[in-house]
Length: 434
Image 1 (cartoon, rainbow, N blue to C red):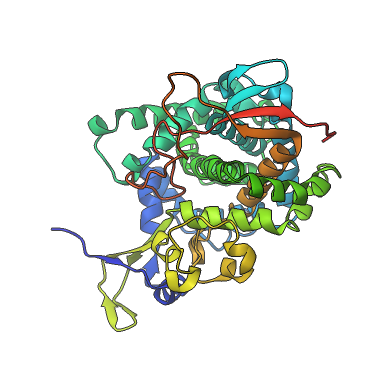
Image 2: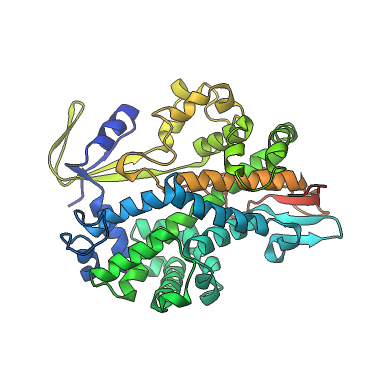
């Protein structure tokens, strides 16, 4: 027998669903994903065991699966913990975007004053390494230098995990998942003093997992999903962000005029100054609108009224946000086009209930603040430091087109470009100090 599925596309109904945390639950999906990442049945059961004395404040009255959500909010929502993490990420990101650091597979060719680069490779290398090392400390990538390469394969094929394809149809994804799992297991098997530098949420969650009796196998599996969430969308979103800016010389000029004064003051406080760059922020919002395919799911625990419909117990409710982003009554008649000025002309659109790039309710993405800072900083540093142009075609080379969005491959986050579509750029250093 099949399972009844309700698909909700009205922003009013989506808001109603967010408010219902009793008969509409996200727990079943989380349990399934924990098992898919390799956690044992016993380990998952312990994550939902009744709270026991001796836990950290915040976990005393919640099962660890739910307390963990609170910990992520404490880490990634604005405050001292986010500021400390962001300083670490920003320092690493800035270093990775220096002229002498742009090397390896990022560089297609180089002359003394020009580097021809792959935009996708640069976004992947700079953002994945910066975030991973800032969150887990340097030791993880030292233990597993090919971890990020495996992650890119996994991320590209991860829809096969969420759709529960059998292993023989998901060999590349499963191999990459196992590589990620092995790296995390080796990491958590080390004594704490041999893997310093992890952020607060990693330390507190590991301590709580060990307190309820989890071993390295389950700890590694349960950190697999946050590792994916932390890294899975920012580099693709950054690719689109930079592609649109660079493809429009007038937009590039306007953004450079905004960000040069902000970046020239240095890295300290840069995130606040970039929020005062309206064109930079408007393009960020428009990229989110055009290229996120986020969705959420709820399980119906008991018959539930939604407007004039009664949702049956045992059914699933799917909330696909992309459809909301293309509502012409909200975003205008040119809703199918990328419009760099859409949110500039009407900043209130970013507060619209039809604009849900990071979901909402109990599943509102805790990492949205870091993602925003990452992208604004990446774009600002690149535009400030370099004259950037699209590399000319070489003789015999197929004519390049603007990267196409891959809308055919299932996705629960940012849509990637069609396989093989990239933007090849020429970089020249500008005379700047930062």
